[in-house]
Image (cartoon, rainbow, N blue to C red):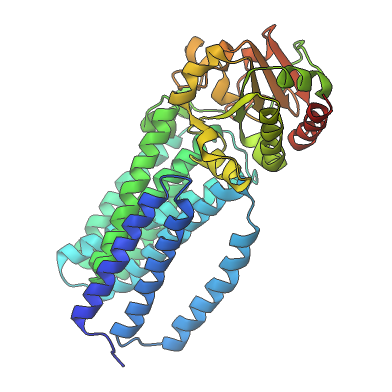
Length: 457
């Protein structure tokens, strides 16, 4: 039974679209991120309810069963996922969205007679398939189920070119004939192309590819909105495609590289390789008590968090340490690099989870001029985002990437588990600087010992 008239359906979809736009706006800041997330969820709920109330739906029980299955799977995963696994979760969402769009396209092909609708269907299928298989590879890489290093082999560029040519030829044939068998073959070509696209990407570049695939999924969903005649799908997909594109460009800029260099850099040795080789060069190390003295008697301290802090789940301890130092009269701020962690905003969310004051979180452009007046920089689980090689070593995978200028500070303390290089797989010369001290061990455990020592001063 149809309850909503077309006019009220259009109004409801408009409200849902506004919710999506406001959600993106809210997600741009840690202060409003929770509200933005709730607005986005409310918009999605309104869209689904509107659909049920405005159409005669066949197979209603199957649809409700699918929603129930999805809910049973998604809720426990969302509640249990660790902050360090957020990129994998985002990649999973990308893949599912792209795959769903591709399936919608192939199911609608038999009903499409107009050429322009078939073009939209082919676009949906191809881009959705690329997003699905590409996202699956990124999950495998980030979970280290396959190597995080770029995977290349002789003939890979040729295969990629052949896949593109086959996709173009197959698309033209499907648009002209509407043949379902060829459409299935085109879907397979898209899946292969997605795998070939992501395999050569490694190390710290993988999260950027996730963002790019997110944009792909948005475009596929937008095209499916054209196919289904659903304006809200078109709007929502366009928003996702645009935001994913902007985020991809911002991440590439934060790394000082082009998107093309990130995607195809491995063919000329420019991709981050994720080396695990451990240096045996001598460094200056100290214990928690020595670090506590350096911090406790400083006037200004900048804390630089990184992925290692997230892995150790030490965010609450580090915020407690910052509070203890401030009680001693030490000025403490957090220096946040745009790509610290695995995704933009990773460190902001991590510290917000531990109730770090928003005003103490300083972005790269804001904190860099302050390092020259800083007594001690405490680097916790970060490496590549403070590596001077980004400025001094031409040919380095991170050369040209804006970094936090921690080397300008009077003293630098690194909390590291080992001398293993960062995610980019290159050595950090700052570790061997005479003014640098290393405290080895699990970040949370080391921070707890330093905190106890600061309180005992």
